[in-house]
Length: 444
Image (cartoon, rainbow, N blue to C red; front, side):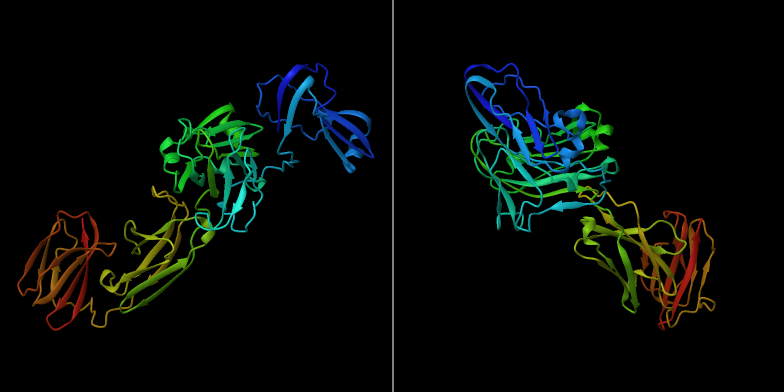
């Protein structure tokens, strides 16, 4: 990056080169267009290490690259007085685009930049200032908007992230109160051979970062981004530059940056499903696979052959769920599933992990030797129950949920089921002597 202040004189019309490489195998020069910018304006110059982009002064291109011992950059542009400044001189290797679909984050807990570089700021590692732990402090300086440049671990083919992946970071403005009107513009800029796109966030997100942590985050979806060149699809095929905005105040400021994350937040299906069933109920557990980025789980269950799953949400870091015996039927095989919850809005990882468990038979259960009668079965609505007497009567749906509970009685009872959806139900009777009967009911 280069900027110069034109003090007096005129631009040199015939600049010999912009970059020059030299070594035992030869010398080559690369040229770049240079227009007269206003004073104190930074301009980014880059050239590909490709023979077609360079002019050989002498020697051979391949022999030169075998041993480069010198790099020179032109620093005289004015026939007269000028002031030149250089920054962020770097050699980048653009790898073959790797598919990005895992969820990965930089939290700076190693106490280093972890491959990040920073432009327009004297970024420093700041233990104890993170969210939590360590963060990067960006101290505002004169010049362009301060930015963090992501390492190439985040580069590559983002096609798999389109519409589902997330990108974001935590930011805290530690000093400075005059948040600019355009503070949310260009919060993240992604670019590559296929184009460039910019993310704008509401100014309120930046306002909330004054004195406290705020999250800048977006789904990687064309609806949320402004494509400034090329096309969205072409850009995602090879993203090789990620600029993170760290300049928000019209004046001096200190900004802290932490927890940059990219990817599909749920990249792995919960595994290691286990269950333990006893007289108190069923204890279900699974492996968290912490790298998947889930914020919670949904656990569902149903009797085998019944309709849809009945789900309950479990929040991280909990990785277990207890189903009390009162919600289970004896001598029944249950299917249960776990799926990862990816975002606060409730988006889910598509793949489910599934397992089954069986409940033991009730000691006094005699389905083939009922004391009472339950008819007609199947029924279209009214179910007549004839029984010498019961101390408890409960009706469960096909997912094991209690839908009706009747008080103790000794007379025939007509139970109207017409308000329930069709399917299999279970009528559980506890006789006055403590005997249990379980009647399957087919409601048409």
